[in-house]
Length: 406
Length: 183
Image (cartoon, rainbow over all chains, first blue to last red; front, side, top):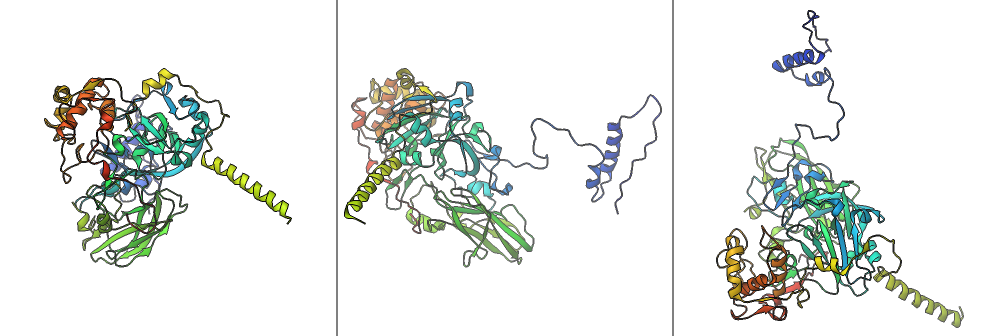
């Protein structure tokens, strides 16, 4: 039994006194030379910890990282256990870099088919009646096929979830006097891509928001500081960041992003345009590559979401899709939001393939890659296929079905 | 219920539903405001209102032919998009083959989008620095290389909206509606 022992330190001669810190350091380094199992629980009690500070940091032993490419960085889904994405791990996707914007000089212009063309400062936007909403934001280009050694982050780390705070766009549209025959509005950013998307007024009057807070704090620069548009459930690109201008119109503007990008060729040769809503999707985040599994009790865990409303069910298969079991959904199940699903499981030690499929309140069932490929053309926007993990006899967990591997 | 009351109720109901219908449809037009923000001046709007629409709204004065665009291409675009627009570190912009990668020639539905995008976001390291004549010249060069316009054609605010793009007819609105069908 470990007992708490006081270090025996003889009083040093006068003039050569050790400070308390030096004494403790000596004791600790002695402990480090001869580590004893279970001793850490005692060691940390032998010196005071650090005092209060101005900005906390993660433990040095905890190092979740986004995975950056030249145009985006992906949320480490495999490292997270809840539904809210820490702001510094929210995915980023931008087309002209992240601008640095001085909030004191920030302005939002709202004009076009309005009675009162108006310029709002950050302060005036924050004076509007505020509202908060938890929802996911997902890039419609959120699928990367890969080899067996592919992390959940790499498969679909371009989705994150936040409690956003701001003002309903409908409130701002009322303030400027939107014309009844305005059908679309242009949202424009002040990054070097001067990002522009045309958005139907119907969405603007429904649940669109102009937001200035992310998990209660100011937006992170990569997520639009100081102000971005938020279109719950819609492809992330349309939630224009660094928002500088809204122009109301009776027709869409046909910007580059909504014509030559963010459109989907279909199997019949046509090209689908203004495909805003993110369909239901799920992924098992644990067990997933690079986990090494031991036979016995496991909890299968993952995330599911739908841009059309609430997730009603997530099915999990542990036999390659032959049979399915409904997982438990973690309450509260919010509309247009990530939900956690979990399923208890015993792994026998035999090679298996595990996968999940999400079902939303419209009755939509997340499709297989083959079902999706049958109706879609060659490009990948809005690809939400069932993804799987194979587990071999050695417990190695590897990314999915052969057909999803590149 | 008397016939008179019934008619009155009916009238009230239809008035209510009309009123509610309008309010629910367009709750945004109101003279009452919270008094937030300040009026935008014409100059302030002009400074930011750079978008160009398919009917030509927003196109500035100026013009260019393919021959005017060629030197601008060589100087500002070629290093990323290739000498002939075939692509490089950036996407190709020339190509009519429907089975090839998406380009202006086989994918872009509106010619006006070319002006809007080049003027707003290109070249990548110095966006917004090209003159209107330079942008019109580049638009003419790209459209000529894609065999969409003749090399002698002048692109300006009147002619550009009239250019019919090969891929225009391919575009269809989103028909996904949720439910069991995969589209």
